Length: 356
Ligand code: XMP
Image (cartoon, rainbow, N blue to C red; front, side, top):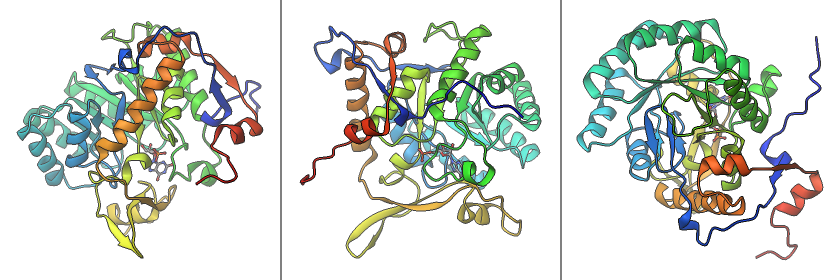
């Protein structure tokens, strides 16, 4: 047993120190990014969750400059229908997910999808990505294609390097920060998300996997996945080293999220659930005892996703201007985090006693 001496931080543990700025307007800021071969105008991805990303969400995310990662809790035929729909409107990017449990069939399916639907990236997704089985599946898929491979989730630099050595070029970071995750309380494992991003970035750099040229094609990219509650969290994640940020809860209440809008007692909401929640698992793996590490929730109905994305984009642009940064690369160079106390956290949220 050992105890690490180095402190690790979550988004709420820090603020970003305002920096001298010469930016006159938030429109002077370019928030474009790149993950693998995919240039994105907006550094946001919708989560591959069955209450978030099917074709409609992926189409709208692409339309707005981001990307949607299709979930895998659907039949092969259904996933092909989504891809066909996306192909018909020539939406890019097209990203599908694969897990480890049903991997032989899934890999064969992926092979078919690559050939048939001209997909851009494959996301190999499992709760604990630093696993031998994951390395095997990455190697198998890398043997089929030179497409971008997103692999995760992991929370340490060493784990990220193992995935890269196996053939992945985009690393998804986040063990347990998600709004409907119970991994940390169920298993006692996890890592504070802000520090996880920083440590993965540092380790990849040390190993020459990230040169700091954010738009360099060979750089391994980092996706920060989970725990984003405010636009400011996105800014912190990007400053910490993420190239893009994945969102579940913040998008789950929108029209384009999978699932119906429900109205009860005049209040509109949508259902949002962890992929390892009892509800999602019992549907996907009927008859098998599920490993439950997630919960189901209701999220307020929020209307079209473009409105949510506009708000988030405004926050990101504002964040860059407070750091005096014109690009995400400049943001990362300029960023200075300060560790805060519980009092600061209270001070930071609107706290007027007579707030309307
Ligand atoms: P947010 O906070 O944006 O997080 O809602 C979305 C991310 O949460 C992860 N996820 C889970 N993690 N158990 C977990 O421990 C689950 O059941 C679960 N479902 C989703 C996933 O990484 C997603 O993108």
